[in-house]
Image (tube, rainbow, N blue to C red):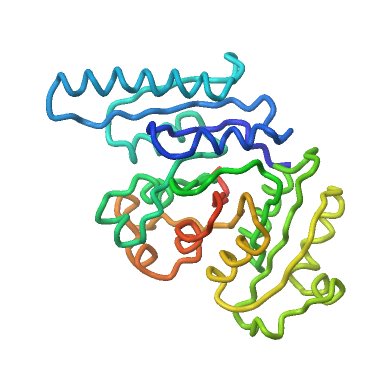
Length: 286
């Protein structure tokens, strides 16, 4: 089983990351997780402004601890000064985080570059699973979790993460979604036998059945990003889990991967358009 027991919660004082973590607390897999709540104070124009921001940061961290009602032995608060996007990545490495949770404004790709989006930068450079929740998303109790399946290894890792999260959970349904870009949606299989005989689905089902997880499966065609977001709405999904490749440029890790940021990346499309929190899985380096 994959453990998500070292959580980095980046709290800017806005958005929904605390609410999202609260929804995860209902899952037995999260019991006893060690949570580091991080607030970053960027450089200010004057010393007085910096002192005001530092004091506000203390209040944000205190409120987060009270809101989450965590065991004091399992929570650490960190207040750091610096560039938020760099600091989140640095702290994630320091604590060897299994999962980063943070809010997102849901900016389009070009906007996120021009407006120096923190979540986009962290998503671009971190090599850890990242759970994003848009500011305009209403966070619900987790009852339906969808995992996107394809033929890749990252898809199998996403399924492993989903099964680990749902291990021991009651009343939660796992939705296995396969979107075949070469298939016309009009000719997608509808009967359970046809769906479960799909090559990708058939490879995933034995693992799901061994875990005795309540599930349903769906196979359709079309553009994966568009169809996954449609399925999120159709099935009233509370959390979408999607495998994401290593996005860091091999030549210069400090530079944005502009071709992907401005291109048609599935991860980018889904994180911006899906009407639910999105867990982008990525296997940590050894």
